[in-house]
Image (cartoon, rainbow, N blue to C red; front, top):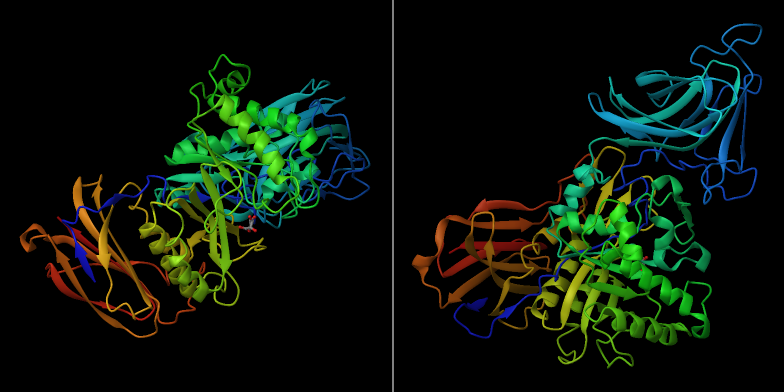
Length: 619
Ligand code: AHR
């Protein structure tokens, strides 16, 4: 590999080059990054009809002691379903309540992670014709061990009343549940029952461990909230920003019919923008353009949808005195969010109404916000787009060999058109397993190609980002978690090799002989803000099953200008190319860094079979 450091034909890699694609899929948000512990907190998941399915809530007690039903008596207009409990037993008399009382419990999303010494805020709305006596507790999954509890009494809850308490856990169980019980004969209504750990990232509601996994990748952008989640199978089930803002209690929630689960929309449009800001990443909002998977809005009647999106942009970017900017301000963010990118739809290009709808959105957005960059769903990598766009979306899901060869996909793309946003890429099928090393190496090949083509590729993100191990409906993914644990797949660790590329300088490098098609490389120079030192980074993927001795020759850089102490070599490899990580072996396939020892501007580096190697030279 030869690198010419003094070659003037260098290029700045865009600051947005590598980022994240977050979709509400696999319970990434609800039951994942969004730290709400209660699932179906408003009893709305069964739909607006009566009786409504209250799953996963369960009843504590039998029919001689409690009758549970739903009605439409909630104080919240947009989510009218409330839970009605008619308690038949009492503290004394003939029908005495069982010892722990009767009531309901919520197991959360496959168990709530309650940890000793940590504090949780429990909120609920209650109404009763009788004085209220209720116990609110976290208990283990058998309902036997109480981890935290508080008794709440109120002589008058004839009108809907909000109750808020904090509970400090005296024990730990990753599979706990929240229960509300009473031993008093009464009829009581409950609604909007929430339990949140007090400690979330900056108090913004993001689960700390999962947030940190994202922050460690130093993402240049975050695309949200999908993916197909944006489209919905049917339009009525698509993500609607307007329904996802404002006080959480008032949000109706919705059934994501593509991935087939309910979300309370606690992680709404505002929270996504906040997430981007907290990550130091630019938000990329993908919105529904009137096209779902099974139905479409005709272009002749698309205008209400266009106006809806303009309102959303005002919500994100408007002055705090503007109509929608003031709603954002009332949610605690008076400064506008730095929303510079929007995508008109997800994978909708082939649809009958896409072109017509697209142009209506495009013209309206450019008219109101000329600086916003607009992303089309149509592929501009091989031919010119029919419609104006700043970027075009490019998705690739394929096997490992073809992903590796995709490194050259943009070599011959026109240099004058809109730039590519490779917003979803992943190896799938047998090569991928649940996240193999092979998958990560093939994807590394793609990213090296994108880095070298970063004059025509502005952004790239792997998909899907997260999977809750209890809902592995779209695999493989980058990050796997359950209620208490998390690990990165090799694909996650592979992305660490690219996290310093955003804004770095791409240097000219050449791999020889060119017949060595199992190797791909890229060289950048970058300044590390942590030590304010300058580095030369050589990344090479060896996609072959044999080791390689790579002769590295750095021209234009004096040997004495490389500092041995501080120069490192990092490798991502494993015994078997199909090796994966797991909760038991979370770092079976993870980068290992060692000091380089002797450094020179001419050196031999051993590349293990099936490996990704990064050589950092401190200058
Ligand atoms: O990333 C998973 C899914 O794959 C996305 O929802 C969709 O855009 C693609 O087909």
